[in-house]
Image (tube, rainbow, N blue to C red; front, side):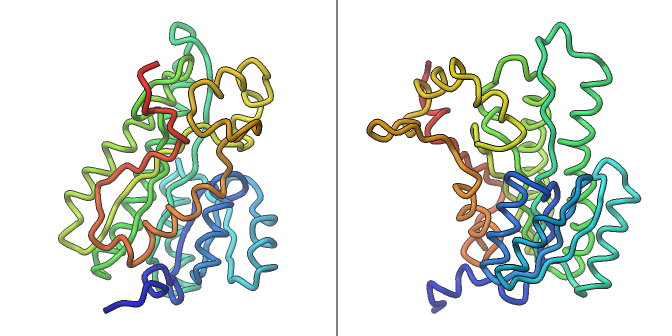
Length: 262
């Protein structure tokens, strides 16, 4: 029998986290590091602060500048990780962008950009890392989708569609790669306090409206929005031995946003 503490122990594991310069990606990197994994943090932005945070906690972190929309960048990410660590056990596919506009005003360029980062980027990373995991006969892939894969958010057509695509990709990869002992799952966050939606949460009218939709938004008289740390447990769970018989699942973490009709 496996001890409960060992179920979530990631010592000796190597994890790649994309979009790790801030927000949910940085939080995922910290969580995996605290669980014992060596982490490779990547982004098109500077990941130095994420690395400093992890190293200050005595974790081992490697940083890379990677554009997930470019196959060459993704292939180099995998090769450099192998050179440094010799294996890849975990991929957290987090890199993403949000461009908002009414559906009738979405430009072709904006549509293509959102799809390239949010969907194509996750596909390229999953495919390249998946090839290695197939050879290893083991691996954990955690795709960051969104609650908009379950219910739509207005003025975010491309984003909504891209995240629904992430869930469909997750299920397909789980179906195809289960025979290689690779578990592929998705996390669907709701509205979290991250730089990507800071302007929305700073709008008092939007924040007030949001509070009426989220059962956990008000605890007594305190306002409670999702924080990146609220995803830490789920990321570690889906990256660990504890989830060895879980695959193709989309775990919604949204404070209850999607459970109501109105």
